[in-house]
Length: 241
Image (cartoon, rainbow, N blue to C red; front, side, top):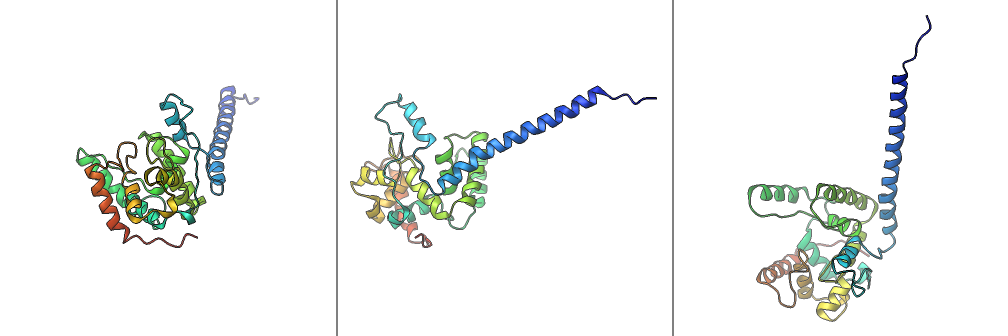
């Protein structure tokens, strides 16, 4: 007797093949849209970031609101006091971890689950990923993408490059982005000549730069600055040149 082919089985096989091809194409597109920009920014300075455009939209798309990273300054010219200050304030294990401070993450989870406080455990690498490639927020999607980009930059950039980009793009006040703009705004001189006290002041407001003040510092900012200044003495920075 002739063998009768099952048309339903053939259609299912064709569907699986097409679905696999679609998923593979989507994976390639995702990699191209994520890995390529990371590779480009390993050697080319970002001209803008999603956060600048978000803040621009929040301010009624004002033409006076910056959408471009200005006054980029190479890390070799940034005051070593500022480098020590931000590491002391934000990520004391920056040169030891691979992008994630698992001990800090574990501690943050415990505090968040057992108290009314909400604390984070973002490393400088994680903050750089968020600021350069993503948007602000606490959704699982954004957190997942932040972790993904953190892995990428930790493997495709040097620690020196991560730190340089971080210091040049992070928000330091309303419409103030990067250490050079912040230094000139708050202290009327370049970030190349920041003193230890000035550097600690800049690092002290990083968790909430649009609400915490340098010119009229709140008590917790003063206390944080003093703590950072003390911790700076214990920060060891490898040669970055």
